[in-house]
Image 1 (cartoon, rainbow, N blue to C red):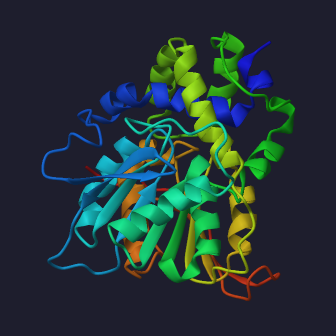
Image 2 (image 1 turned 90 degrees about the vertical axis):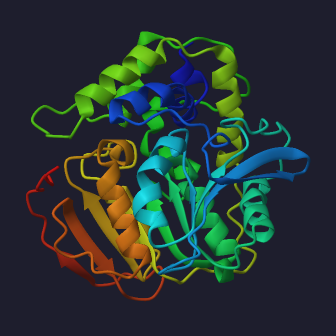
Length: 353
């Protein structure tokens, strides 16, 4: 039975992305750099329930323009962190959380509680310490950032969600025809059918859509996918299970601060219309689509995504940015049908070197 059918598409996506990290660094011209080996960084080793993980901190004690930015993403987090480190660390302290189940962190326990990863984030903020932060989540960790903000709204100044919807179950429902069941354990290798299915969602395949760098990203990912080891898939599968098992009980809390939800205009895994609907429930919020990008916008247009995040967390205007295909504002009460203030979509312009 194909892995994509037996174990759930989104879990396979995470596993494949982990294997492709090293190659993707080469695509973007970045040097491979583990979270624990970057010179001059402050790396903290922490633990929850005996499970060790770490966070990498780039301190800005000189001229911070906003509260620290805490960034947690999927298996491509290290590379995107390289793209964020310059623009964001110029205006704020930047913290990358290396979640259990990725990098050199311990594996996620099979019997973890539904709030395990939420407590991981809380441990980072309590121990660094970070009283209040701009919280950034992307793709599979978007629901983690969202649920943390609901549970601890007093700790979140602004919320940024990149290519994400509210929950793993919602992502599965968007692709119910490609994710049949959700079983334990992974021991199989990936078939060509698995690879093709994942690539069609991660990287846009429509003819005529000018996604920047998609051919290079797709070709490199395809070359790496066939070399996934069963233990690598299983490790990331446990992390995905923890993300999918996140409790949606906010404990009576509700986040009503500023939120930005963005994705590539050609995203097939978390389509713009789904992200827009999610953004509307977070009002006051901003929804933006990044031109000439798909679900891999954080790799294809890494500098533009970093610029968008930097502008949002420092309260700079977002209108008129040449790399946005569209932008829309939801200003009404949380969860209500609200009029939006849209910016008419326009042909995206590629910034010069």
